[in-house]
Amino acid sequence: MFKIFLIEDDASLFKEIKERLTAWEYEVYGVRDFQKVMESFAEVQPDLVIIDIQLPKYDGFHWCRMIREHSNVPIIFLSSRDHPTDMVMSMNLGADDFVQKPFHFEVLIAKIQAILRRVYNYSTAAPDLKTWMGATIDLERNRISNDDGMIELTKNEIFILKLLVERKNKIVSREELINLLWDDQRFISDNTLTVNVNRLRKKLAEIGLGAGIETKVGQGYMAIER
Image (tube, rainbow, N blue to C red; front, top):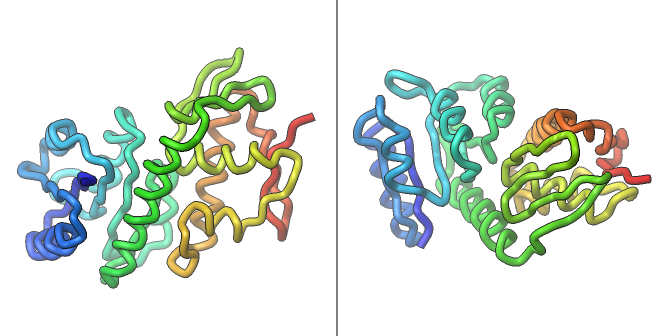
């Protein structure tokens, strides 16, 4: 049974989400003290985190940063604000998905199921290591390393890199990446993929591999290796 950590201060919404997710046989945990979110996170050790943006004391972006300092657990943001920058910022901080309030519960559960299926089924089935451009990709630990250093990647980033490297020097379409990452592209903004790829490139640049992923305008992306 998967454990979900729900960081939501609206008591009625928390109750509704918990009841719905419990009916799907998820274990749902909340926050007792919004000044001690990380203490609750460490106690629960969740498989997935759902964070509202507007929270007491510190906003959801703050807690996402804090979680990412310690864990690559999948994160979904909730927001009642109609600001496109909220989605971009959440993805830049390492979130895996974004849900706009008010939302249909079926959309939320579809996103949760897709992320859990991808993250936990993939991690047990994939081989541990791959090599690319003189670097070693550790699929189990979500990191890539070479002589210039080692960087940690989120689940989405390592999955994108894996897909591109498996078909290096060949174009992988945006549509295929979206379908493989999120299962149902009806609920995904095209910009979500762009943000994830740009974030991956920025990290790869730290070890001299930023130019290893090329954008093919109007087609998709390609991991190069010569």
